[in-house]
Image 1 (spheres, rainbow, N blue to C red):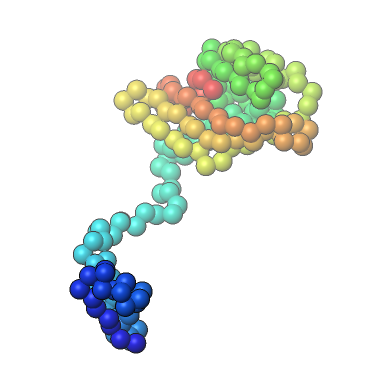
Image 2 (cartoon, rainbow, N blue to C red):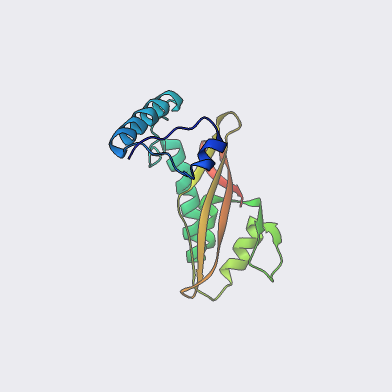
Length: 176
């Protein structure tokens, strides 16, 4: 194939030529070189590698997560004595069940009394907890997705939010 050039579109149309071609062995390597140079010039700096998994929790965060797991173990066991280890009875709680039920607000003490009387089997679990600690205020928050089973059947899923305070050197659940 050969390259055809014309002075104007009128010349091209008068000769009824539609395409101009260069032999492929010449144009493709040239095109690749141009693209490689353009890509090198226009490419941004490489992004730093981000770790796929998060770093292990600090001992403080582990203590906070242990309180949330203790709260859930007490919930699953429906044990008032276990709740006392991890919760402050005067703390607040908001419960947002799936529709059509309406949200409820109560103290943790009232919640514990209600749970102790429930006759169904409860299995509530969290995973991938995110912990935020405010050292100056001795306060922490744990945000984690959860799944709740009632009598072995998934009842609802959502997000748990625990607010904890450090009292006398120990973390306690103040609000859920």
